[in-house]
Image 1: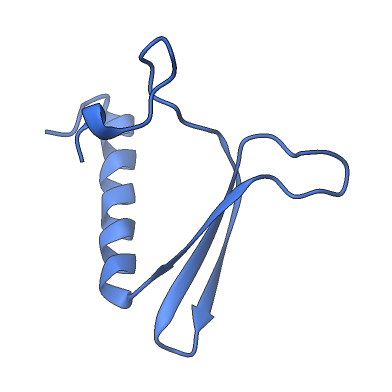
Image 2: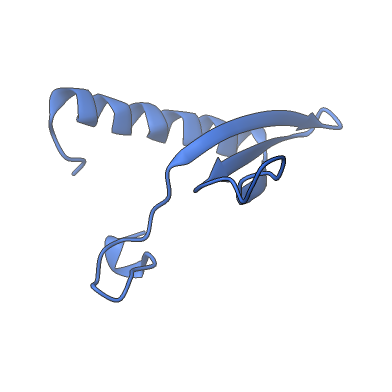
Amino acid sequence: MAFEDWDKDEAGRLKVWPLQAFTTAVFDGRAGGIRFEVGLPRGPGLPSPAVQISLDPQQLRALAEALNEVAEHIEKGTRPS
């Protein structure tokens, strides 16, 4: 997906939130789940807003590969092509 399709604020900047935490789960031995807590906690004792997704093993591997690729670009100071 191109950046043109990402959500933007009124100034045209990409909307992204800091990752606070993430957890994983296995569902019935068939799928994996990831919960990404983002933004700021809502208050004492309340969880951060979160996105929870379910992925099959192929999607999990593709996501892991994509995240590793981004980390490598950051460490090398390059941009993905």
